Image 1 (cartoon, one colour):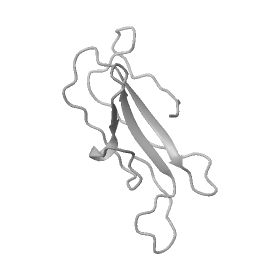
Image 2 (image 1 turned 135 degrees about the vertical axis):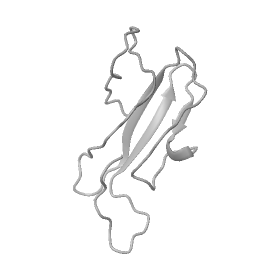
Image 3 (image 1 turned 90 degrees about the vertical axis):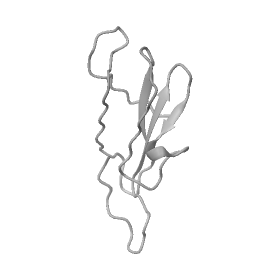
Length: 103
């Protein structure tokens, strides 16, 4: 989630800064989009992905990217919460690695 600056007067579904949350299964390349969508969410500034039927050893990459930053903005701060049984690549339980990759 992120705080989005106010849009122009009269605009009812307008994100000024549009971020996208995507989770990718590293083994199957399956992508999970936020809020139950089959593509990126360009309406909400609160996005959630729930993945069911995972198996031990499944590997996922969490991606937050910007599809648009409004005029005068070069960055957008956001909050990210990841829950579940998380292990790093070496098998030690730890905080998930931080990545700044953009897709």
